[in-house]
Amino acid sequence: MARLPYADLATAPQALVERIIAERGSVLHLYQMLLHSPPLAEGWLAFFTAVRQRSTLPGALRELVIMRVALLNRAPYEADQHAPIARREGVSEQQLAELALWEASAAFSPQQRAVLALTDGITRDVQVPEALMHTARGHLADERQMVELVATIAGYNLVSRFLEAFQIHSHDPR
Image (cartoon, rainbow, N blue to C red):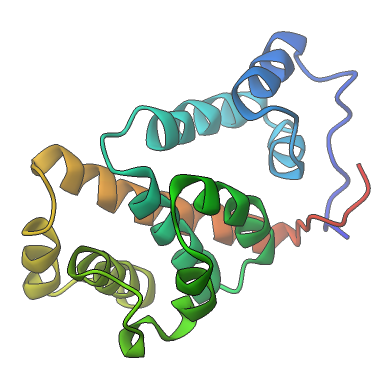
């Protein structure tokens, strides 16, 4: 159970609730907690909509990064929400199953391995060695994709930390 009660959707700004539903399909627990602060919920929605829907980063790569961040940060809600999206974007069942030990797996391409190494570096160490940045950059189309990749990794670290601080879980009642 979450550490704070979820915001009452009946008293939340209805235009924002409707926008969340339009962009996410429903008001997920994450957004129901964020709605205690409508300005934060609005900014969060805008940022993560840009990451997920306006980025040039391939969807499978984006979702692989999100799933790895969730795994490293022990954030089950994040993984629960993104596993179906990852599958739809083309991440294989084998890749999901072997993500915890990706370095020893043959299921990942050189591009995916470079991106996962950068994900691990940013998530675990914060200060990233130049070699990790250089290698990842070599597997992306341009600087825009590199910025989008790092923003995705950093952003989903924010998501998992927020979720875990409040103990938000998929099985929580609404």
